[in-house]
Image (cartoon, rainbow, N blue to C red; front, top):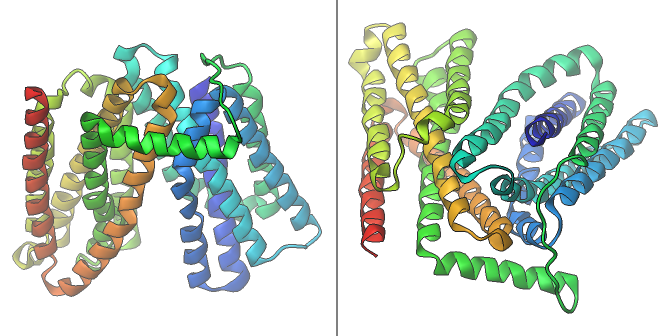
Length: 402
């Protein structure tokens, strides 16, 4: 029931977010506003730790129900604005920010609930399914949203999203999640702020959890921007692929992410904390053929050999990174007591996800400076990941000795 609810809610949110941004593009014809709205709607991720504090204080099932009802109410108000033609770009931006804020509150409640719904030995598989659903929504939303936006129009798409949120809230009412009431004294806001501080203090004191969060952040810093910034630049600018090959390449990477998440149950039996560095090391090795694929002699041999080599390695890396990320998150869940689960998971999500924009900016400058020698930044990434593998080995070797 949790998974079905996630499919409905996440898909509804992703569809609406994409359609509204596209509507602004059609309304104004300005790509900068389109990009700014997408960027602004991502800012509420900074409030995730606050959502984690709330998730540890209140019934997580009830929180999810309330969040989805609020989302459906926001969408309903916006639908009424569309019917009366009483809308603006600022209003659309406000709707996107509010929905993203609700999503930032929602995510910690979900991730903190999973360890309470499954046995510990099934936790990796459960996390993989939830992450697979999120990845699948991210892949299908632009395609499905674009089709529905063109066929049905914005108004129908908005009311559909509102109904999806409403149905999810109804479904979640029938989920049973164990909950123990925690008493607090004084004002609620002060209590939640104190809980947030306590969550950060706990993470800093727990060396194992801190190391896991550090690894997740570094992986997000170096690899997520590679797929968001680096791969599109290489495919479109360096290799000069057409729309079809570009779509196949990016779609294959997205599919690898989904498959890696859904296959987590199998990979969980192969992963061990003391050998995690080997998996990181293997990803570094797969970066080398990507650099070879964009060498001038390789490109002169024809597009298809370079393209297949480059995308093939990128697919393997995407799958391995997904597996490692879910495994590290599961380790943190197993080490964290339930009363701190929401805060710790929220801190982990906020820290790791905030790394990606920093990496995107750095990769943008790096790939621009080495536009004529694109293999150089790829080799630099390889060296950095090799160092990360060494660091991973060092960190957990010390952990084993403690």
